[in-house]
Amino acid sequence: MDIDAWVWWLIGAVALGIPLVVTAMPEFGMFSVGAVASAVTAALGGGIVVQVIVFVVVSVALIAVVRPIAARQRAGRPDQATGIDALRGKQAVVTERVDGSGGGRIKLAGEIWSARALDGGQTYEVGQQVDVVEIEGATAIVI
Image (cartoon, rainbow, N blue to C red; front, top):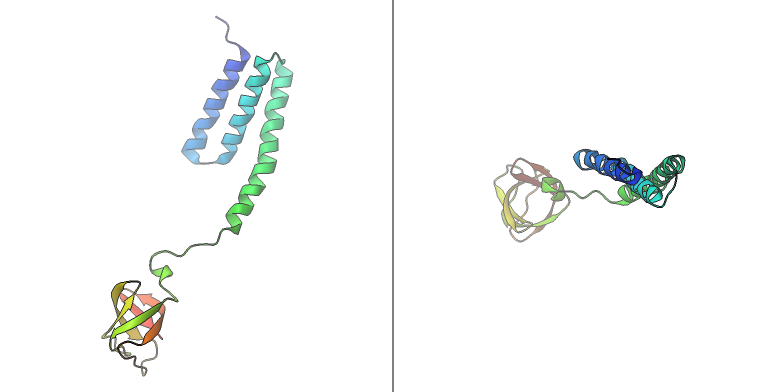
């Protein structure tokens, strides 16, 4: 039983798709697309040399074009702060008197946090707005 060349190219495309899924390296996907293009070439009657040339040209072209576009998209995306990093710089409302000793409370992002003033001599009264400059454990440091 003789298997046609286009079937081998499709098997190769699937084989290249497996490391794409496992490693998340998009280059394997581009090689897989090159193998599919070679399968089409083989199905249309192209010789082995033409098939290999199509594989190389399509794969290299995809890597040369798609990778720089993806890199620009990735670089252009601003980093999003999460967790306590997202709370730095936010405004909060004092719910219990805040001073340098750390006995006060603020309402920050809809939650009540313990708080202390960055400047030990500064106090903030109930209802006053403060800015969060740091989070230390479960305590917000405010100014």
